[in-house]
Image 1 (cartoon, rainbow, N blue to C red):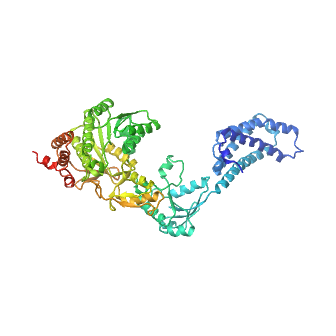
Image 2 (image 1 turned 90 degrees about the vertical axis):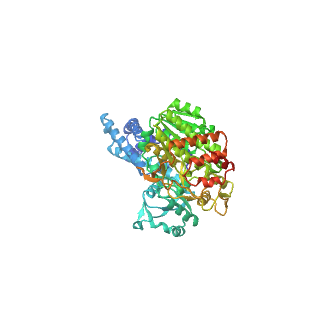
Image 3 (image 1 turned 120 degrees about the vertical axis):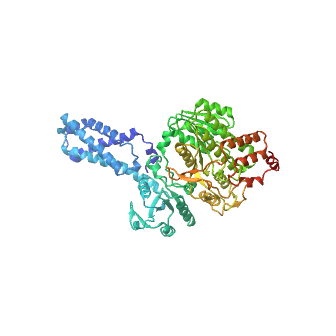
Length: 630
């Protein structure tokens, strides 16, 4: 059997040598077909050998010109045969023309000129088909999976077309299902459309299907979840196809089915962004990202870099995070970045960096966000999330920064915990500060980010690796989710279109039960709910059963981008009162007085939800002393 591994290492020189030798062989065969060995004259043989140098040289040129050596032989098919035929045809025309002008043409019988190119096509075609045959024979020894294709649209057609070109014959399409009843009984690339998606269990059993391929790249998350659950119930493997746009734009090298990811199950229709506007917004600008080494910050930095800023300044208090994002950007070819290891509460360091590099745009993603930890770390939460925001904002204003975009959280709506309360105060600060400064302050608010540090998903994944159990606080706990990529894109869009004072909110679809999320992760890991337990631990301090994206009093206004809304609501406190309350909060922080801090938060959040009622029950008795002071 032919050693395919050896053939895969063929260099261009070796392939061209084979094809040139085929010219010589075809030329000789043409002579032997035209003459009997006894009839051919020695003079004609000598002349035929003499002009072979011209013939071979011309063919070598056209082989190179049409790149006939590039296609892999194990994929040889009609397009490659047509390429070979074109190269041989033009070489044949040029050879006849050259030899005509050299007066050597008449000494060779005309029939030879028609016989040799036909033999050459045959030799080159057969040699390549032989390699393809043996390649297919080796691959045919692998297990072939009977495939049921879901969908009969463009995704399915592209999948079947690509499938025919793959050397691995591991998939055998059996049938297609589609909910368009007018397609029933028809075919797509020879594959019969036999019914609707609801008939999947029956078809899988009847046709002994090994694999279901969901060939609807634009399928909504809810429909995908139902399909995956249906496949899990009948115990058949399921795969999805990648994005059509990514494949057509050359971001993917192939259109192969892949495992269903959590992002697929939780995702939404992509938000249509004004990419040209975002590019114009960032192009040739000095941009600063605080918290640039974190989950959202690092994704934000990578997307900003792709849009060609003049310079990208990344600040973070984590040495490792800075090292990681710098390495990632350098690998992308960045030469216009600067990293700074500092804490945003360090006013001197922040002022120095901003005055030195003079950014025109700041994306503020630095924040503490772990709810249970911050419940017992009030000082650090206030210092970082509130006072750190103020330090960065004041430095931005004093240095003429054009736009300041702050990343907020859905926990800032009707806050019941320290994290949400501090983020809401930061939102109010930005809205108030926008009124008295030339810098435009913009806030972006969204829910939980899949895969971010400290989120529930990495926790569940680690628990699954250890064999469980998965810890869920309450069976009815629900959260909004979005991908890190979506979060970064929303931040960029808000920065682009924001005029100052707005809070932008993404339509995040329906909230997801954390219990359902845990079940999905278990199933995606290849385990069953019998193998890994789920236990309920009870609500943690400060946790809410349901998150909200906006206050009831905030009017949601549509923007030019679908699914991106502006939450229109004015702060209840004027800037003078807010500023005085903020100064008192800072003094309480410096005195390390937790009771006074809670009271300070209480004052700043008057009329902002039920934080007061929830928190007053949990604070120390010294709150009463502080609240009674004049």
